[in-house]
Image 1: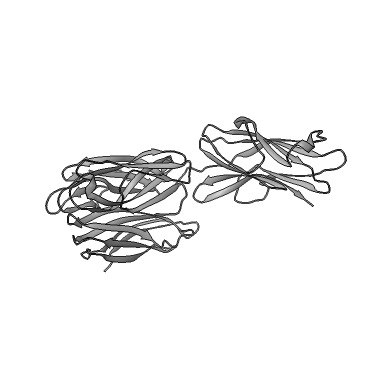
Image 2 (image 1 turned 90 degrees about the vertical axis):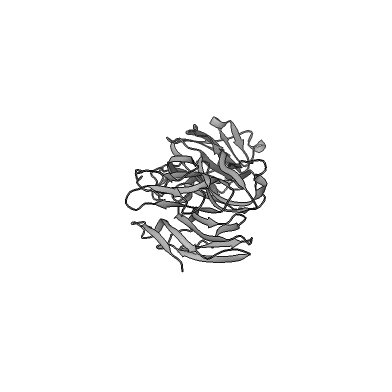
Length: 409
């Protein structure tokens, strides 16, 4: 039988889930010798978009020498699958995982399920503003005494590095490990602590943080006997214990953090606050490309499509966008003046017709952003058009068009 304790967290505006959580206790049989099992865990409603799913190990009863492998699979709008496989003859008697589902691009979950060649590893990530992170340990395989600790060693705008300690004589006994990396913006994590324990632990009363989950996970173990240990969350007050119910307490590092499931941080697009347009007779027009763009603050020029990741300190961009005229065609343009979910009155719009002595139109827009964040821009130059877009990672990942200029009959 599957025992599933869940907290239903509904989006009151859309009537759909944006976050959900629960405790899965369904793997209660003795698992060994190649046994595999997949359980479908339903959400307490339906997500509008496929959520990211985080799991953390909170209860484990296993013999030394066991190798159990966990992965999330088949994530849908209304459910996901949790899969277990036990490879050796040593028993895994019972295992609980706390799970969290969230539909928000300000958090990114990177899965490293069941790594058999255990080592340090570097992962790519998508959101340049996700510069904080924690690790959720979920599975392992061992052939003897082990002693390890997982940690995030560095986070850049594009990559995250995970290290694992390598204790001589014990590291080789760790033949498999599985974990997830949870990356987020600064608001994502609060009061994150790594706690070392060699005996039972009681957190004492903690202050419940609004719109946040209390997240618990192991990230290091010193094990030489069977593992029989658990996190116990109390219902009366917000607190927890780490203890064993029989035998030796396994020396461990565990991590706790308050993970946000609602955010106030909203990343904004650059907005055009001034614009000058020049129509001219360019005596060097034959020597110039059809379309090019200069960005004075960055001292960069583009004659073909390109990508820019701007530092946090960049809040002003001055463009020079050159369009060589095509006779009989009109140049239509728009520049973002107001960021809104509605396109009504969102852009400054213009139309220019090349005629007579006019053979080039040059646009000089200035864009400003009062915000400290990394900015991801894409410049797309085609034969007859240019668009400049900005990628935003908020509750939903979106692409905002800052500039669009094209030829039209």
